[in-house]
Amino acid sequence: MSETLLVTGASGHLGRAVINHLLNTFKVPAERIIATTRTPANLAELAGLGVAVREANFDDTASLAQAFAGASRVLIISTSELVIQGKRREQQLAAVAAAKQAGVAHLLYTSLPDPEPGSPILFAPDHYDTEQAIKAAGIPYTFFRDGWYDENLFMSLPQTLASGHWYTSAGDGRISYCARDDMAAAIAGGLALASDQSTTYTLTGPKAYTVAEVAALVTEVTGKPIEVVQLSDEALTEGMKAAGLPEPIARLLVSFDAATRAGGLGMVTDAVEKLSGRKSLSLQRFLEANKAKLAG
Image (cartoon, rainbow, N blue to C red; front, side, top):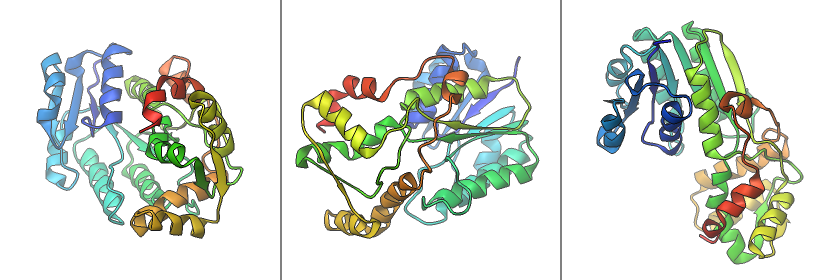
């Protein structure tokens, strides 16, 4: 197989990990890999290994078409533009159009579990519209509907451990946490496949947990007790605002709790292990390995 594989957002945590797995886990020759980023200087190490590094700006459609030229299989990693409503959608639709213009043979995209209309997650429409645009482009596709990273816990656990309270509106809903590196390995495996079939994978961890169960694991690892405090969505939003978060960010974060409560993040699949070819890291092992980071 001699297909050229392109990864956008290669300077980010996920993009860089995907490329590392292409090189090291799946032994894809460096000359078959293209890494794109806004800041090519940040990928000098990859360039030194023989990976083609190209500039790609999701706000500049012309730069995207140039960056995608000659690529057979293109992985569009969803952008991090969450504050300005509609910005992420605009960027991603531009990338889809550029991929079609460049004659890409297979388009891969990192999406969200169950992004269909009705999802409580506020940016789910960005993912749904991007998936629909890819289907409409008539290009064979692979959707990786990524679940919840273990690493996302670092955003809140230091404050939770400091206060001894975990404020949530998730109720008894569950999240199937997955280590980012496990997800990256799975995505790299899917990107390296010589397949022209359109497929959707939901990428999750090996087990789903309630907030109370995660709190119990964290207490076991750290020795610090955590009281889980269930609130309404509105009360949780107001509490976040009182703690200094801008209202749009507070409402975005609370929408994840609402989705958890509704069962939208609790599915468990074996897609990560099948695509990566390795056993997934358990949440307990992840917490034990990152004990020092939990304290912030």
